[in-house]
Image 1 (cartoon, one colour):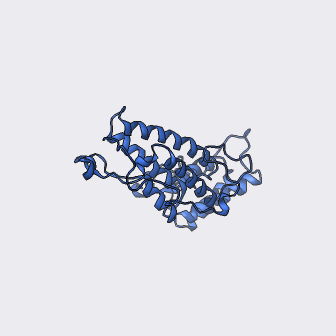
Image 2 (cartoon, rainbow, N blue to C red):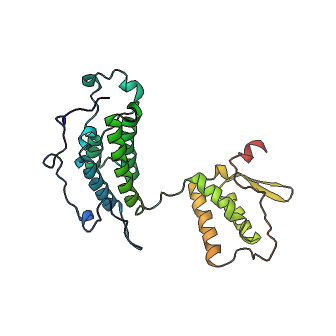
Image 3 (cartoon, rainbow, N blue to C red):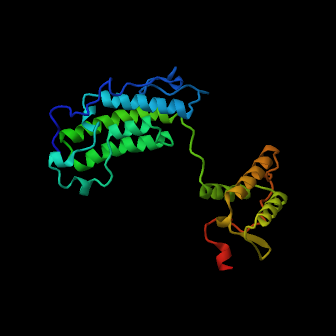
Length: 252
């Protein structure tokens, strides 16, 4: 794709994209700076403020205007553009979504910025001006995003991840606590099947509320130090693994 010789009408300038300072920006480090020290807290408002600052840096870059508006495939004679690029994106669209609070979290913002540069590098060949501009701006973005990302709280685990984790935690509980777990599962309507003196359970059918209750039970035993003594042989009331997503109850 040929690189335009001059900025299009959508060229980024301060008068069109004047940033509104917010309380979240107060004291925020620059987008390329180091992350806050130990104990620093970054809520979503502050994180989005830093995302905006990083996006401004990209748009102010000498080559930022190239990505500020959607690719005009017709004007540029790029007949195959929408065949090659299934999901077009540009930094101007990212800016509007950010200003209108369309992003649920900063990671969604990052995904669109990456898509912008990935599209440019997919359609153009290495060595082409647009490809090289995209590669340079992508590097600037990743450096700034790494600083923002270190201050973001990790996403909560999915139910599937919680089930796998509970499978591991269960082996560390004393048998008495395992009986309590079995009671919780039974009361919650989970599938329990006794077989050869062991209880088989299909955690794949356990809902989020039950996982919450099981998590509190495990946390309680950890807090009170009632885990199985490492010097004692481990015993289990349950057949292992408890959770392998194999739908035990469907086959028994």
